[in-house]
Amino acid sequence: MSGEDTGLAFSQRELLACDFDGTIALTSVPAPSGTTVASAYEVAIRQVLGENAVSKYVEHGGLRNRAPAEVIIDLAPELDTDRVRQKTEDLVAAKLDVLYQEVGQTLPDGSRWPRPVEGFMDCWAKISAHPQMDTAVVSSGHQNFIERFYEVQELPAPNLMVTDDDMRPLMEHLPPELCVKPGRLLLDIVHSRWLARYGIEPNYETIKSSRGRIMYAGDDPNKDGKLAENAGVTFSHIGEGNQANVWFALGLLLPFRETSKTEVAGV
Image 1 (cartoon, rainbow, N blue to C red):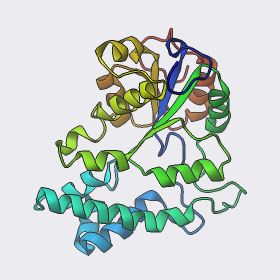
Image 2 (cartoon, rainbow, N blue to C red):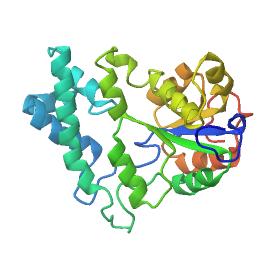
Image 3 (tube, rainbow, N blue to C red):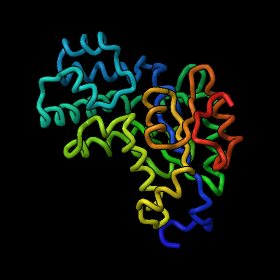
């Protein structure tokens, strides 16, 4: 077999793709300095768009699981496409300047920021060690931040990743709404990369025959749930207050090929 040969035919493999913020890591819980992803956005917005834009950001409900370009378009709708693109890059750089240095800082309970969602670490270790499983992160966050999280938590990194870093360049050629959740393009890309990992050409037949072996987990039923629905894959809702139970249930479901394309929550 061309591509990555693990000794197991691709037709026997499964893929668990996951959102990051609120699904894998509690980035809404403050770091030791008090920083959260949401507050880092406020710092970055102030730097890139000014104080009035921060007030507008707060009035509009804050981040709301949006990608950086969505935030810029909301706060500065008068900007043309080129200016949106540049301001988005500026926003990402300013935000990461604040956030990246916080990853791995020690919290009062001895864990490291950002703290993993309850139940995630055990399930992820089990999934990563399963000979039939591959893993992916699909996030509006950023690859170096996510990679750093896995490093400080001493967890196996995902096999595949599609983040806002992949999607921003595509916005030069596609409408922004196609490049952010719940647009199915994010899962289409991770699916194509999964096939390519095993030397399989992504085409109608290969995508159709393997789509049912993908599950997507996320905390936002609107963004993540609709993304899974639009892509035609099973959705597992990592809901607040039920996170440990769902991660535990996901571990028990492996492999999950026989699961129907309906929401798996609180199983």
